[in-house]
Length: 157
Image (cartoon, rainbow, N blue to C red; front, side, top):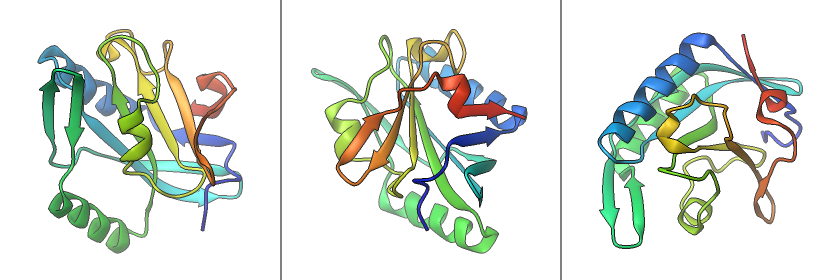
């Protein structure tokens, strides 16, 4: 299974709200955080059902901010996904200023399914999840910025 044909990620308001709360809480402390969305593929739509905040460690380095999710937390998530019959479709994190995919984001993604979504939110999500956010999709040659406005790619249901 791939997500290459997905042209819309449908997300419940409750998942959006919990994602915003998590990103803002980390941002108030000056850190990045990963929130992961899982759900089900339905034709060309990915229906998000669950937001996950796996155990993670955030760092402030001379070169910027970084967050790491260790192997045990990823294993626990994968077991949950298998038991629940859901697939991982999106990773979301916030930057302190601009929204872009950094070299670290490109090199160490959590979402690895082709067509998967990586949403980068500026200003630690202070203005909301979709204001000036940058959406990237995983292709066979790496991460590529989706040219559509975020609100066309991600629908809140």
